[in-house]
Length: 343
Ligand SMILES: [Mn+2]
Image (cartoon, rainbow, N blue to C red; front, side, top):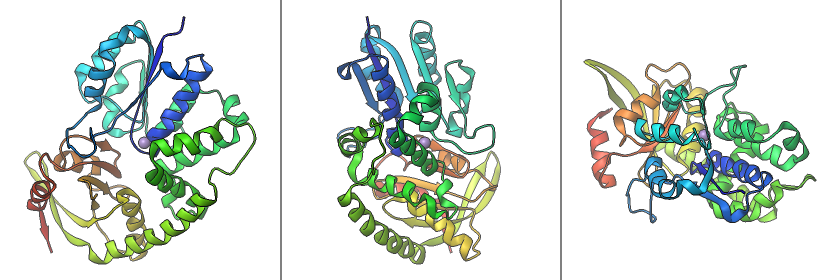
């Protein structure tokens, strides 16, 4: 008899892709919808209460109390934070199917467990997303081929999350559009309007007329926001401490909505204008931080984030995201600006 399955995923588009893939897998394996436990690893509980809910707390709250009812645990695009929680999952993996598929450099330590695979790139060196790795594990190529809309969704999500679109590839504008729509419609909207299309065997347009209208306006606004951010940015020096060594880094500081997309677009503008910065720091309007740098950085931005943020979040060598140090946004900004000398 089938019990329950838990799917644990990140809050962004790639995390949502893990939910989609996990949900399809669960249905194919005969789990009923009511027996799928969806656990969204949201940092904020109850809107903006700022109570940190690390994924470890979520597992503590939602898995431990009913572990006997659960047959399978899928984690994708996200990893646990503590060794203790990893050991707990390792114990569960002896009697249940536990799998973790992530691509964040900061989670590489989890590779010591047989059930966890954390890889940033495939054998050909192509950067890959959490959705891509989870789909590879849970769905057959044959199934994906038979579902053209799902195939396209996985492709676009993968391209977006691995930043392949940022290399000024107009063919991948649709990947950015998908992320913009996700930002506007959220998980609930995608469950209602996008998910049913992914289950069809005939090809249909993923975006309807009203979505296309929104995207047209949103893209114009994004361009305007990007240039506004560029002209109002602060340029300064951030001192990164590596043990006793101090490494001065040239930083461009901006604050925008759509933090990660604009940070990415700014990277292009810098390249276009031949400006050299060691990294771009984008303060989100909700206390989030998005850090970006070009390839082969002096210091990987995921390391800078660990020094600068509250210890949550994580990411990759050239792109990382997290949150300001504990306390009010103003206090957090102060802590960071104390570490930055503005030109
Ligand atoms: Mn991801």
